[in-house]
Length: 362
Ligand code: ATP
Image (cartoon, rainbow, N blue to C red; front, top):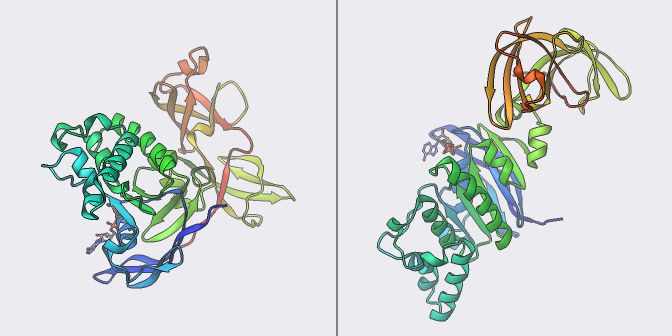
């Protein structure tokens, strides 16, 4: 069991009377890679700036390893920040950029050389030590910024959308590298992104934020497969949300009227009553597109098909107007993949793959 490194308690922040963070509680564990995920304006950067000490909370406390940091100025907090636009010193070599913090501390020359060499090797830039920043690619410059941020071994590294200026391919490569670096260093990373795929693939845990409130805190699988509410279900990944109504229930299952037919589903974690409306959540990859001559599932027709390489993604309109997203592994021997736009099909899903959520009020 990892111990708590950073505790945020009842943290609030307002700007010009507008609440940006509202009594937020969060425990960050020692050595974890945790990601703050949410739409633009939900307060991710503000939260990071409060942890770094660049902003002061209106209420609440920030405690690191039992020490109250709330009043500690940023330069005295045992942490560092990497921003999207990393400000490297343009006239200094890679080596000097990375060595800067240690030189300021007047560390012995030998120690500086050894530590810079070590961290440059970690970010795979050992052959670039003499170059100037303008002689590097964007990804390499970002790696210098990260090397510079970790050279003093902070307890915590805050990363504010550090990869969002990179192109798609480089971004994917850097995601893998950052994760590896974090494992090797054992430093706790607090990473900010609005890219849900990035959050799921990199993190030990994800904090889903909306309007300054934590919607869910969990592992990537928990957040994707068992979303706590409609916001998380819709924000993290694509989803089908079908309206359903509970017809009856017994000890371990419930009978639900969904898409015009009756389906026996697993009992959800929340209490249900007969007649209660529920949402039946199915990810596109949970949907099966079937031959129209069968009697399984519901009838509809294909209105969109997108070949994505490994998957074939379809949009299907059911007779009642419901739109269904399906994403299936592409198999060229399966005749279903020859179905074209406008053709009738049936859609269904494998029992147990659905996730139920209650109606939300307010
Ligand atoms: P993005 O993904 O777009 O960066 P974010 O989730 O990081 O968004 P924040 O930058 O934390 O969001 O901003 C949250 C809200 O606080 C926004 O409405 C923003 O306009 C407001 N805000 C942030 N900083 C200030 C400031 N210094 N003065 C006034 N309002 C601010």
